[in-house]
Length: 369
Length: 85
Image 1 (cartoon, rainbow over the protein chains, first blue to last red):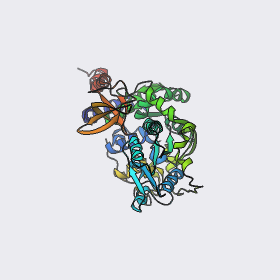
Image 2: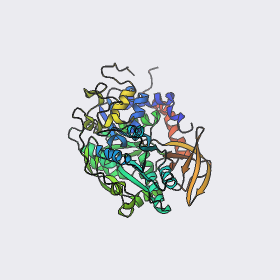
Image 3: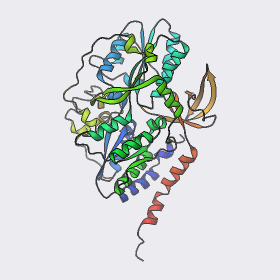
Image 4: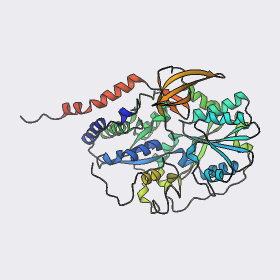
């Protein structure tokens, strides 16, 4: 496919690797923010090709992973109600809450449906006027415009039986939380390419300046990732903090202004709890007051939910780049994608799940690049 | 989750006030909302996430970045110290 295949070209990747080896003189720890990047890095073995001085740690950018257990339990309580059609992206179906998951609820008779586009959920509501259709609106800034479109469209078309269960998160406050963690080792970031197609690169300038670090907005294919690593290492080696855009074929400094306008027409910034990390101030989105009629948490009173996370799980430290999946004694034994204990194992984009799926098991010898 | 892939716009139409289209992703055709990407038209490549076109792929930027990467080792050779005769 055009604009994908050429960024998987081993010949070009080898050239970039040669350049990374040439410019690296000291150890550096880099974090890729986005779960899609983590998945691609582990799948293609990008981290194992790097010189030993360069360590990649995996960031908190997997929205499925960081959706708090309370919201998952709320989703399950709503989905189990008679008269409800619960719609969701496929990624959320297997995520375990305190008692069950959406797939098990579906097999027990609940009307749970996977949608590809949030607009499809609005269509389901139009086609089922006697039912309450709820959409589980999760995601980062990349997904926020599509989710905002669904709710504003429902409002405009007078579709009153459509509500959102919102659990949106934002990337910049998470980067700041990583940098403020005691024991932080991260010196540079591969920035989230697709988030920046919407938001642009400017909000990262302030972070780069404040913490004097390089942030290179990076794509998702192996060649993009290696290019992003090369640019970050070059900046670290020369002490050049600041923002650089590796993914300029789709990311502009201002981002997509129309999509940003759409986000702010539906959502406003709020404090948000992240699974494994805790509450980060101003790190999430909630529905604007004018759209409260479309807020599932107002429409369905699910009462107070008590949740607890397994004590053995170290996903909070993994999400902040302090530990790797192999540092966890439960990895691959007690905790697997079929029986996840916490955030980083529940989604294919979580660091633990990616390590598990691509055979990164403890004690396995690492091939010399 | 933030997976987005480039597809070629092969049809543009309107659906009750919303600018929509169809895009070809290597043979798979899907409906795409183009409302918030007015600059994208027929034949353009757009980056699509959950049915929503986020941005237009800029062919010149893609070409420029890629050519630079392809030329990397030549640049490296230029920088390398010259071998003793």
